[in-house]
Length: 216
Image (tube, rainbow, N blue to C red):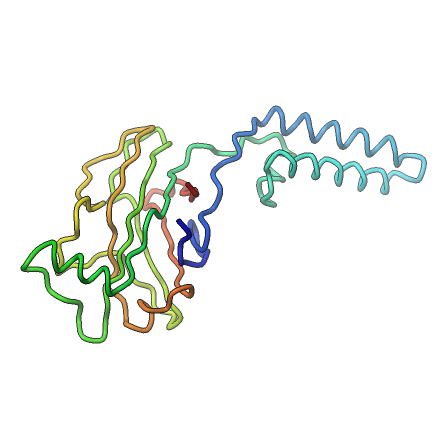
């Protein structure tokens, strides 16, 4: 499904989810770099060291890009022979419920659910979370925040409402390699909640574990 969020933030997902880790080994990356560097250096040596060095790096960079390494930091890590961290928490937006639909679903879930504060609207989404880190993950380890065109940052949580099942906050723990899904809700100013295509969503962890976004 095409998400209606813009890409932004520490670990974010937006109009399209960010790609998962390439899975290319550091050894393969280093081999591509060395081969490109050596070939470029030999081709350009007669025209001067600097030109040969530049040609070599450019060829190596193209090899790495062909292997799916397209981030500047990842290119630098690969060039230095460093491992690119594949132990990340993967988050995917499965479905977005705009305010009219979100409020109807929340009202139907529990007769005691209260509507949003005056001037605010509920925005809800269903997400999946995969834990690829060595330690168990709880929903409370993750912080979901949304921002609209009025530049106000909202933390997930519709405090006066019980969310439709499954709610992400009801999950006890996600073991290494496990995937769970659930609903996340925001209570936002009406202008921000209705700003389809102009909202950004941020996800981070309190302990600094890496978060990536995948597209299914």
